[in-house]
Length: 141
Image (tube, rainbow, N blue to C red; front, side):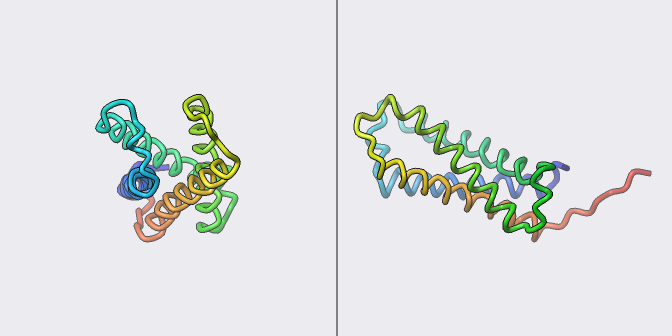
């Protein structure tokens, strides 16, 4: 795996798309940001770095040897998105469980579905740029 133009564009744009979806969902639609007990700028900064890490993680997962056995770019991207989304859902649920008094199964199912959708969209951004950006393979002399 090379860290060329394709990697950086795929990584950064998938992170931006996932962060934007996160911000619209939690900040505007659910209005969760009102419940934050520390400066909003800290939260947004931490979230931005988290999505940068997650975007890179999705790219590395997509490029991993076991997943290269999946020949379809689309299926590999969908698989990466589901794995990434469910992983983020599990982590956020474990962290959030001690902060939330009233977690219902409906809340958990909606949150799980949202995380999977959000990360799948991010993974599909990786797939899109893996397809449209061509990087020549240089041979060693």
